[in-house]
Image (tube, rainbow, N blue to C red; front, side, top):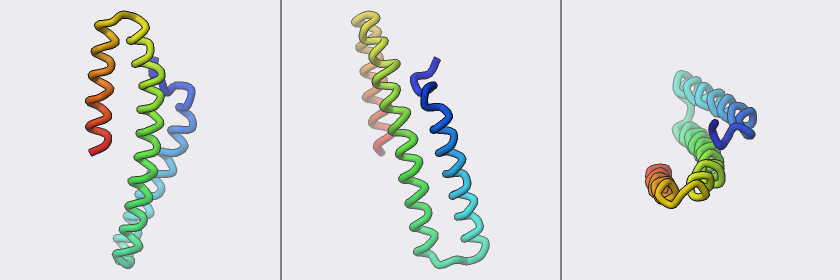
Length: 92
């Protein structure tokens, strides 16, 4: 089971909203909208995706990583290494 299961409905709702925003950007491009307006919408989508990702990351740390740490030392060390790796990738 994933650590974000309790927030799944909220995450899916946010992702559907982001999907709609991306479609809006596509329409803006098709309609030759002003560059700055398109860029503002792209920034909004990126921020929304970041929030979804951070929410999943937070749940992972408090769920999966915490369980691994409590289970045994070696599993905890591996979970922390994995967490640090994903944080590095997520924040690029």
